[in-house]
Structures are given as structure tokens and as C-alpha cells.
Image (cartoon, one colour):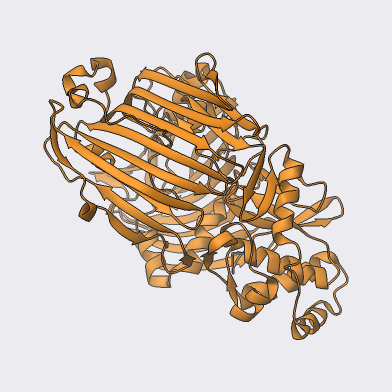
Length: 634
């Protein structure tokens, strides 16, 4: 919900804005400008905690924008709702010499709805503000004071807020009464935080200076692992009259349980419907599938973030009556249906998002943004994504698989991990039957089976787009030059590991290169790997792959018996810690037979392996682009 930059995460009591001359661009060290679009001149954040439920949060940030790529930092927005009120917003604009050009006026601050669109209902609002200025470099300075009402969440702090950003000075200061315990988790901070006792308060301060710009590396760890960062939480907190604890995952889960307890009551007619739906079903899986399908067919997802509804689900009867809800409400509704059928299930918090997601298992705190349902089932569990109207029960895609989640119980709440799909399950198996004409044009039938995470995007496309739009997407998918998709069809297999079979008919006008009697073709028509990495760069951080997969291509390409091999690529076989690759080509009786298999492993690898990865990608790219030269006999 918060749209202000990561680096604008705090502040306390300031005696006034800094002297304007301190913003002169000439005072920025050259080392901070090299490779930067912006330089943070000052970023002061102070959080003053008054009680378990109230705090004041102030930020003062001044950023010098060096070029148009940094324009976004000349403006910002601050969200507010019943738990967060904006006390003041001030701002100033300075030229390259540090002379003030103008100040932010009230009319420059726009009060906007915080709703996210057609599937969102929220009482969030935001105040957007900033300067429009195109004479570079210039400096934008903003000072914001916010009152927090409910301390389930505290601000995070990053020494560097993003890529291509130099930082002259950044600090976070937290003023906390001795009677309240502050929990912190720190990354990449040199030394220890400065701590002093001021009256009945403990003041803790983190400060960094002269940080050079960074660029996020390919397959890098989460940002907090590569820059100074501090995460905070109160051991005991209060929000909207509810008392919670971050002393342990179990205690936090117990708190969340108090938010959902008693919200599972179903009306009489729905109880009867549940009995009818599970009648004749003998296994837990069959009953779950029947109730899950009913839920999918009779509800839709709308994000409802009203009041404490941002964390507390609307009750089951609300969803039944309205036929919609957010992730919390729909999950609670499914939980209630299962409970009526005598099937226990567990409300589960998850940090959703594709690829690498930030999560600290050793720092109990609200790191979650989504809710799913876990149904214990013997030695296994059935996982349910209750916001989807199309996926089958038991499958979690790239949005929520392979990560820690919190099972919320009245007692005994605990972290577990969602299912992992291995390289063979995350497969793409493609079979191609093609004919190349003498003019170099190509016609082919393509059958591709996508499984597990590899079918996620295809599943999303076919359920979100009509056939004509699907065809438009496929027209951009392959490296065939000018080609046309003549027909498409899809068949879904709703298995524990889902499959989608895609059948295409393609025509490409200039697939092969024709020179006199010679015909040059690239046997790898549709799966060419073309991702070159900078082999001259020095890798600074670990290499992280979270998505293992297997791609297999088999192709028969008919060219005609009149063509004989003049030159043919040699078979390739590569095995490395990152995975494996093999390809080979054979030509018999006017038919080219091509086979390719690529396996990528998941894992975390030290920076010293960078050159190995670069070489692997270069070799795969070279093999994928290899050409077969055929010559026509007299």
C-alpha cells in the first residue's frame, strides 16, 4: 500500500531544513555520481514510539536528480487510512547551486483514492506531491510527518533504496520507551547501532554515508541481502483493540487466529448444500475437490481492504451472500465449507510473489501479503489457492510455491514450507513436424506439453484472453522472423501436477537461407537460448536460481532427398553444477532429426562460479544458433 520510496522510511524531530548550500551539486563526490541517476543527499528517518499502539514517524529526504532517468524521485505519494494519518507535508526544489527555486504549495498536493482498480475496494487514500522540473541536475527535498495508530507494522530502512543511486547520508533513529521491547534484524550494517538512554527512552540509531551506486546483478539475492538494511517490530503490539506478539511465530499465529475465530458460521441452506456436495464421496480429496469447485464457481476475487479488514477476513456468510471476497475472506469461506463437511483445514499466511521473495524465518513479524488454505491429508497436504476460479485443488503455482508459510492455529502455529516442483516436473516437452520448401519457407505442426510452473503463464493466458488475443501473444513468442500462426488449440489436464497441451500450426516465410544450391537452416526453430551475460564483469553477490526446469525438443524437418549434408554441427553435451545441456542433429533420407534437452537446477552458488555460468550460457547460445548446411545434388 505504501508508495513512497524505500529510502523515505522514517524521521524524527528536525530543527529545520538543512542549509540550501549543502545541496550544491559540486559537493557530491564523483564516486557517488558515477553510474548514478540520482544521489541521496540526506535521508533522515525517526520513529518515536509512544505506546504499543501509537507512534510518530518523520522523514526528511533530499535527492539530487542527475538526469531524466531519475525523474520519478522528484515526486512521491504517502498513503493514509484509519491506522495512519498524515500530519504534514513540506517540500522544496533547489537548483544545481543549491539555491531554492520554489516550495511545495498546498495546491501541489493531490488527495487521491488508494484503490487499485476494478477488483479492489479500500478505504486507503494517498497524497501525491512533487515537482516538475527538467533542468538537470536539481534537488527535491521533502519532509513528511505521519501518525501511526496500531503498530502491527513498523517501517523498514534500506541504506540504498534502489539501483543507480548514490547515497551521501542516510539514517534511521528509533525512540522507544524502556517499557516496550523493540525487535530488530540487521543486514550488511558496519559495526553496531548507536544506542543511548535519553530519560525513560532508549534511542537506537543506524547511519551510513558515501555509499556508491549499485546495479542489481542477474539472478541476485533479495535487495536486503546486498545493501545495509534494518527491519523492526515490537515484541508486543496493539492494533484496533487487538493485542499481538512477535515473540515467536507461534505467538504471532495465535494472534492472527483471534482475528479469524468465530467467522466460520454458515447459513442453514448452505449447510444443506455442503452435505449434498460431499454425499457419495469417500475420500478427503474427492470431498475437497467438490467443495473447492463449488467455491470457485460461486465466488470471485475482490480485494476488500476496509478498516481492520486489511488483516481480518469478512465472515463466511458475507462471502456467501455477496459472492465475492479477498484472499482472507475466500480462504476463510473455504475453511468454513470444509469444517461443515467434517474436514479440518488451516488458514495459512504466505509472502506471495514470483521468483525470489524476501522472507526472514528467524525474525517473527508480519512479512506476509496473502492467504491460502492447507488441508492435512495423511502424509501429505492439499493446498488451496482460493482466489483462483480456474486452477485445480492441490496445486500452487510460482506465486506461492516453495517458500515458508505460517499455519495459523489456536495453539501450535508454525512455519512450514509449501510444495516444491522439481526440474522434471517443471517441464516443457515440444515435438515439431516441419517441412522446408525450396524457397526457404517453413510449415510446421507443433505440439508442446507444459507441466507445473511452466504451464502457469499459458494457463493464465488461455483463461484471460480470447482466441484472437492468444494468437497475438503467440505471434511474439518465437524467433522465426516473419511467421503466421494458422491455428491454435489447448487441452488442460487437471492433475496433481497440471499439464497443458498446446497444438499450433505455423508458417514462416524466410526460415531457411537459400543461396544457389545451398540450403542453410537452424534446426532449433522455437527454443533458442539467447541470453548473454557480461563475462568481463566481476560478480559481487551469490547467484540464486529458485526455478528448476527441463526443456526437451524433438523435431523432424523434411527438406527432400535431393539435399545432402555439406556441413553439420557436432553433437553437444555439457554438464555443470548449474544444470546440463545436450543437442544433436542427424540427417537421413531427406529428413533432419533434431534433439535438444536443457536442464537448469535451482540453488545458490558463490560469486566465484560466475565465469562458469557465463561460459555455460555462451555454449548453449552457440549450440542453439548452429546452422546445418545442405547442398542440392544435380
